[in-house]
Length: 98
Image (cartoon, rainbow, N blue to C red; front, side, top):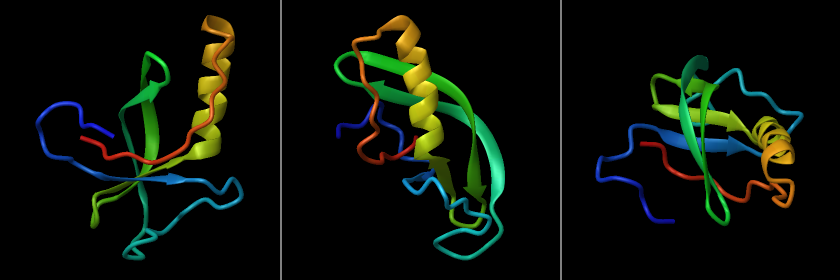
C-alpha cells in the first residue's frame, strides 16, 4: 500500500481481528495499555476516505496503536448504509499510522 505524505510513521498499528479478545496489556512488550484519541484516516475502495476521531488502545513503551476490527467495521457499515448503500465494508489488512 502506498504511503500518504513523506513523514515517517509515528506509531505502529495493529488491527485486532478477534471480537472476543480485548487487550489490557501490550501484545509486544506486556506493559499496561493506555488510551489515546487521535484521527484515523481510512481508505474505503473505490474512492472514499473517512477521517474518524477514534479512541484506540496505546502502548507508550512500544508506540503501538491498537484498534478493534469489529468496532471499526460496524461504525463504517453504519456510515455507508446511510451515505453509499452500494458499499459493503470489510477491513482486510493493517496499515502504518503517520
